[in-house]
Length: 311
Ligand SMILES: Cc1cc2nc3c(=O)[nH]c(=O)nc-3n(C[C@H](O)[C@H](O)[C@H](O)COP(=O)(O)O)c2cc1C
Image 1 (cartoon, rainbow, N blue to C red):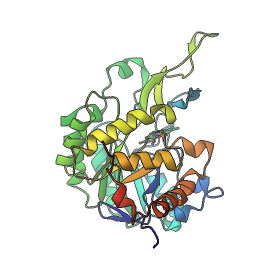
Image 2: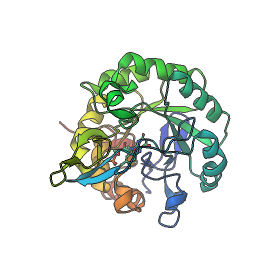
Image 3: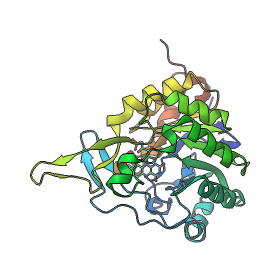
Image 4: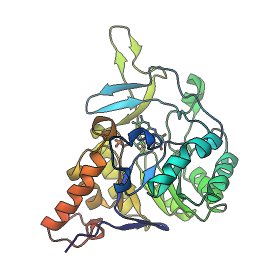
């Protein structure tokens, strides 16, 4: 018997539960020579905003023990250029496309973005990035800035407003930079999100002791990679016990074994981020590895694994 890797997230029927994490796979075209894109469960785009953004000043990335810091600052061409220049290639892949969106200002920008994408047939789902730690300009704003996903009421309001203007599958991406992520996940669920994606990056910092300067121009930045995996896993497990909607788990997934851990903790699908920079074929290897694992253990399908942690 062939193991069944199919999963359903909102209205999306996916051939397998392996995705690429927003911002780590560009708009897919960048990876076309390295990865057989048709094999992916889903492609998630780099986050787009209404207007083009140049992103933050360099240096914007640095390596850290078992991970990396990034402060890209949502560099993107803006929605209209994305639709004209990036979407045609994405459509050709034949794989479901999730467009990640963020607002530089208020909820209205989310509504405008969602309305526009709602009208495009080939967009399968919208991911609300309410958790990017890198979009506050200047120290003052950064110190005072709060992410939407750090506040349950603000999360509820944004998700509800977008839910009202789109029937497409809606995914809400959550930040780990909170005391209790389950409160935020529950608020998103109450507001009508079809799934939650977690985690975005953890706030971090690194200093060059020779120059006494921060290694990242914006001083603080988002930590990703294997270093954050145990935190991400704990959060997926906590959220799984509280919500009924599917969870897309991510944070330091490097191989089949780390992907499997997330399914056992309660994720219905997984996303690969930082690993794409080390081995662009990580997703493809994981898809093959999941099949092998299911066959070896005589498990009929991936769904049987979700949340099957034994305590
Ligand atoms: C260079 C870089 C850029 C990222 N850009 C985005 C982004 O545009 N939107 C978003 O929602 N997450 C973004 N992320 C966060 C990832 O999607 C993911 O949530 C996080 O890195 C954890 O997964 P990982 O440890 O597998 O990388 C970015 C991460 C990295 C490393």
